[in-house]
Image (cartoon, rainbow, N blue to C red; front, side, top):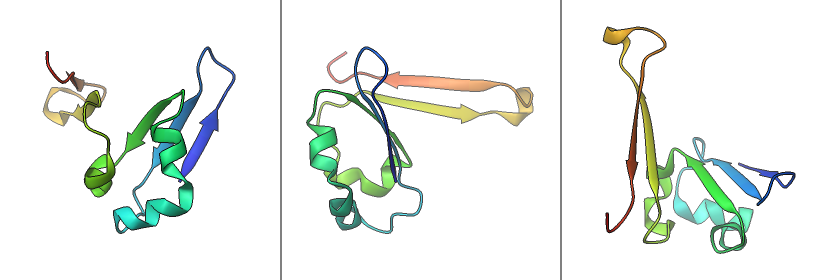
Length: 82
């Protein structure tokens, strides 16, 4: 569920919660240590754990538009307060 990368300037914590059935399952990962730690968390399928994601997070959404081609992506960045 979580992959830790510590070789860069700051730690990166990559969560893939695709198979998580509820936010309570995240307790097993110790997510609090990552969410409120000194690194950056990248969460795929974040909608599955929406109720435990801290307020004020920057949200990045990447979507495909096959009508515009296989390699076309739309990237939306939502920064709270901006």
